[in-house]
Amino acid sequence: MKIRIAIFIVASMLFLLKDASAQDYKTALGVRLSSSAANVNNSISIKHFLNQKTAIEGLFSFGDPLAFGVLLEKHKSLQTAGLQWFYGAGGYLSFIKTYNPNKLRNETNANFGAQGVIGLDYKFTGIPLNLSLDWKPELNLVSDINFEPAAIGLTARFTFGK
Image 1: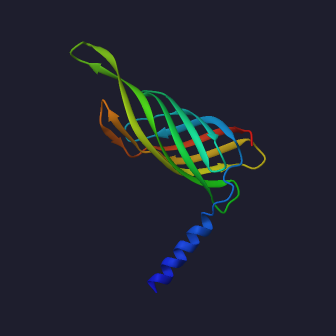
Image 2: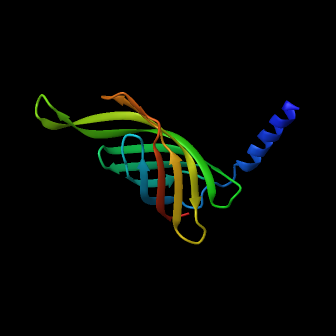
């Protein structure tokens, strides 16, 4: 009985996560709104598909910290037209302002880290709009070793090309 249930679950997942032509746009540019336990971190997002299933996404966060990030993402189609799920990984470089009490002034410290991403991506039919909801945990590796697990974001992008 357990084997039948396992086979049913696997078959259902394969049916839902079928590997068809993933995206309906080539490049998209927009804004990612995000908050985590530590801070609000909004950014500019540009996503470009290298092929039908692989995209590269660049993020520029304009808050504190100021950050630049790059993600390589794999996209998989879902049953609903225009809807897909994705996962990926990448890295980032950030600059955090901190107060140094010994020098009585603010300083800027650089952080470098790794980030992962998993989410849903939807391209509206008939209009050049793409929405994405994702979870992007981050791990600072240099300067301040820290893990940020709660980075949830909503991205709205203008799409062009196909």
